[in-house]
Image (cartoon, rainbow, N blue to C red):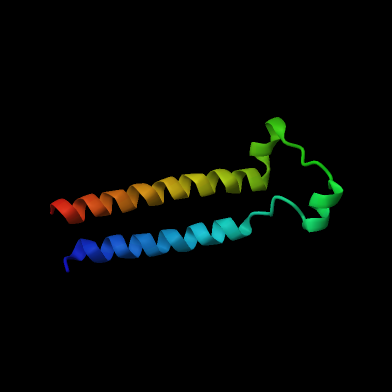
Amino acid sequence: MLWYHYVFGAVLIVASIIITIVVLMQEGRSQNLSGVIAGGPEQSGGRSKGRTVDGKLERLTKMLIVAFFVIVLAAVLIFLFI
């Protein structure tokens, strides 16, 4: 194995751990099953959603997943053609 196999492997492991931590930091969409059945309080969406901590974590999660996908795609292409 060449050195960049280890680099890509390490980067992907670190990225997957970071994605897992960020996803676990987010709040659930509903409090529990009784909130769904009883029609619990509506979450205020709209313009302020992106400014909340949960909104920022959601944006960070999306960016990390896109970066993870790009790294995996680059690794596959490099391993196939080099």
